[in-house]
Amino acid sequence: MWKETRIRQNNGNVVKGLLLLVLLVLSWILSVGIPHAQAAMLQKGISREVLRFHVLANSDSLADQEVKLKVRDDVLRWLEQELTEEEQGDLVLMEQKINKLLPQIEQHGKEVLRENGFSYTVTASLSRDYFPEKTYGDCTFPAGIYTALRICLGEAQGQNWWCVLFPRLCFMDCVHAVLPEQSQEELKNVLTEEEYESLFDPAKDEYRICFRYF
View: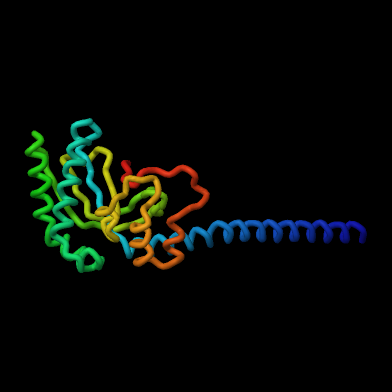
């Protein structure tokens, strides 16, 4: 009788231990899974409202990196003139216009390369691609899938330059460590309050310039 009672007690302890373990595992899954799901939803919302711009250099050589920036400057100046105010203020209209301008964008890139003594290829496209987390001024765009205007120079194996084409952050003064107020307003106008606030992490005390290389 005593042995049977002891066995039942041991079995009961084992069951309690297993239940406690299950509860701990479930708590851990919820603590990790829910924030991750929320972050994923925010990223998807942000990605639907922005258009990124990337110029990929042929290589990491100094000459290739320098001409990449010249292509960037030329294309941005030209795009700002080609895009009407209405198109600059509407993501769908901007994407439609840029899609039509892709051959001309390539031609501008080729002309810049030729003027600087380069003969490699230039390709421009609007594509959906995965991008790692990147900081732009004092705001950080989460990793995920984004639509981007991509200009690939030659082998496109070098560090690239990037900015946000819509809203119009590429066309604004963005060489400071903190995103200018006008640029912040541009983001506020197209994002929800939660999406906008998620871009700014008050815990970060190291700010980087807005145009990033990776």
